[in-house]
Image 1 (spheres, rainbow, N blue to C red):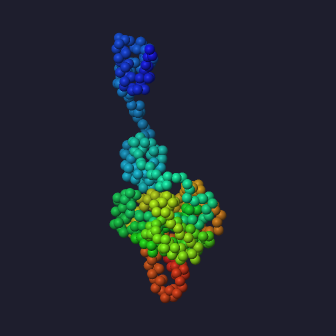
Image 2 (image 1 turned 90 degrees about the horizontal axis):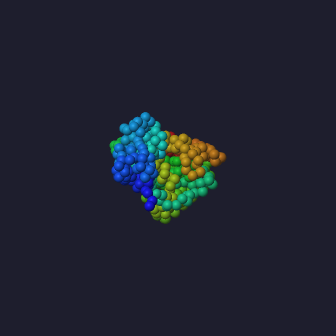
Image 3 (image 1 turned 45 degrees about the vertical axis):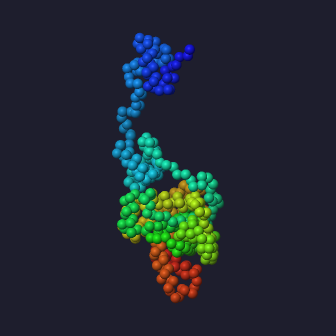
Length: 374
């Protein structure tokens, strides 16, 4: 008959193993050596089972000099629950928002120790196919265009959300991102409309053309009402009017947001690096646009990008590495308010000297006049 050893009993349950040691010890008249021999364990193990607790004691050290203080640990846990960030984004958030410098590994250990779990987001397509041939892309030939609702309670704190409403700051952001260099061109507005959508496209295209972009420009956008709203007739009309500028607009299939992954991912950076740290310091529109310009310049010249084929380079470094004849001044496009652009366009439209020159020259004059304001 095979004898079950102490180690085999312990695999089932430490408490059950110690109870069996006590029973065997009692049947042997308290003989420690004989009990240890029967269960194939040591005499010290038998004595601990006889004199100690049935449950295992905690192996946690009595003192931990390098452990994060409890108040800071609780604060990190609370911030993780409020923001939904995982350890890497949370470490950046703590430094940008509160000036707390703490390593990603420490944040990761705190979240794991306290069983804080963040729900992982699944990709929209579930596939790993690349949207473009990133290695072969030339600068400023493929773009993604999208808008962002700045008043987002899921991204901003309640205090920041109320601050934007209290000081009447812009509610929407317009983004055009070059896929080849990840360069970013931005504008803001108080409302969304297809008029603003068309004007923003023309403004950005003329800025590119003024800086020696001679290749065809293809712009991918969604089916939002601020663009063509899913209307093929409207899309064809826009493409016809922009054909003189060698621009092609095309939309994604309804619901295929994964095809806008580059510009969509940039919206997260807006929250982390611009809105959350700086929005409460903006007490008027002028300050907001000034900080928005600084954020765009930071993105284009200083912020490393780890997307496909970027290898940690900034858009400026990527443009420089492409050996293109395009000057880096193209990355300094002014950050404007669409309402201001519309105001200038209205004044120019009512100028009798410009009415007979056609939409192309009129729009060109419009955009250059806006550029000269900065």
